Length: 91
Image (cartoon, rainbow, N blue to C red; front, side, top):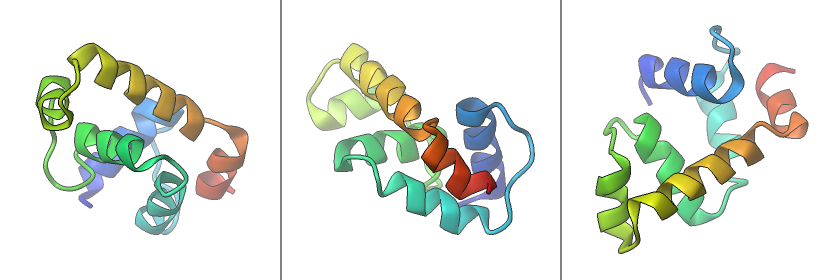
């Protein structure tokens, strides 16, 4: 997981610019709370797997519409913003 991808993820999902201590481990921990599909979408969309993909590319891989992938990404990010998950990242 590269540092810039982690910073972009934290900024987009949590609105913060600083990375927490042990960010990679904590991000992995909160992403495992998502469904498998949601985790893949978030990791791929934000480039947390070192390869950033568009909604269209993800949709093609899952055999669903880009709009559905977008909806799933929004839902996953909403779950990640839950105070319990934010607490894991930021204490």
